[in-house]
Image (cartoon, rainbow, N blue to C red; front, side, top):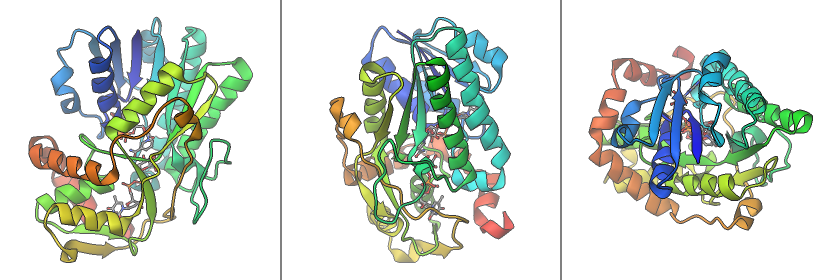
Length: 332
Ligand code: NAD
Ligand code: DAU
């Protein structure tokens, strides 16, 4: 099988490429990535010489480059996106272009080159925030940030192509990922690396917002199952059900690194900050998937990885980055 993975130089795309090349010894992977600030070829250093892997630098919203890499692949896995909610509050347009127009460009190519299936990697954030409920695959979209609105736009384009042209596309909605190679802007790698550097961790508001979490490998296993056993045209939620508030999560990370609550700095809240996301995952369970890594175990592994791999993240936390993160929202 020949797979096109877009956004394969990012956090989860690179983990998926590594997972799939190791599990299926005959599979080939082409990685199409624009190499934005979040794309990093260091994420793939251990596989860059693998003869079954190739890299193409390019934009998923560019029909020309897409028409060069898509013909002949057996599946497209669209991991490429602008992904960070805080950045979307400042640079919404970039999000709309990649997450909506980029997805549309790939869908057009699926039709033109009759690609058997495209898997759209999307998020629970499209459903909006819920204090107590859980979202199923059919729940209505109520996105609240420019990021989640852009992802919802891409997902709705998938639905429209399915209904209008019978385009074989599967949409996945996942809870928060964490693990090795996650860019240190997301809460877990930001907090872990700050603490290793002896800095404080900026907790938004009162730290009461809640998220569900999934470790990298469990997400790779879920996408693998969906790619091979999922039904084209279907939507699948991906969650472990592991839910925790940000303050509880912070305390767990502090504990792993031998720090106490003095390392917490409560900062101005994110504008429009979604309180809680939560999903059901019955369809994924029906495909035979269940999580293997608990949140406690996953956090331990993640902290150990960042401790052992300063070469990877130190240079990402350069002066420009420090300047950005030292400012509060109103100043950014
Ligand atoms: P990331 O930000 O780590 O990486 C994104 C990658 O996409 C980068 O390599 C970047 O260079 C590339 N990219 C961005 N714009 C591009 C474009 N126009 N053309 C080609 N490549 C482009 O992302 P991630 O956290 O690994 O997320 C991967 C996917 O999973 C995204 O679609 C995201 O919306 C979704 N998702 C993420 C999470 C999470 O917790 N991080 C949870 C649910 C869903
Ligand atoms: O739910 C899935 C989504 O999870 C993905 O679709 C997004 O791509 C991904 O970025 C993530 O969005 P979140 O906003 O949930 O992730 P983030 O790591 O930015 O924040 C997690 C929680 O931690 C959130 O409630 C905000 C809070 N936070 C975050 C940062 C960066 C802080 O308290 N301080 C921080 O410095």
